[in-house]
Length: 111
Image 1 (cartoon, one colour):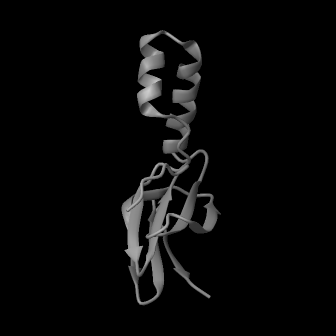
Image 2 (cartoon, rainbow, N blue to C red):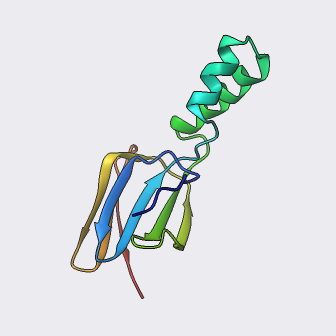
């Protein structure tokens, strides 16, 4: 129904009712543009790629986002100082469960 860039590199995603829940570290680069810049030998892209690599390793934490599945409107964001595992997000009985690369399991509940 919609297509929109999100400011995170999505490592986990789950649909809960009409909300799409996403979690991941910041996404600093557009891969297509970065490839063109590397091909053109633009040195700034190397710094950008290093920053993205550090983020993918957890240096910049991550963000949990809840987005309306119909309209793409961001309903909620939460900054986290951790890195989620790949595909480590689940929803059940009104709660979100998130596993992290340091071995934690976190639980989030709505109001």
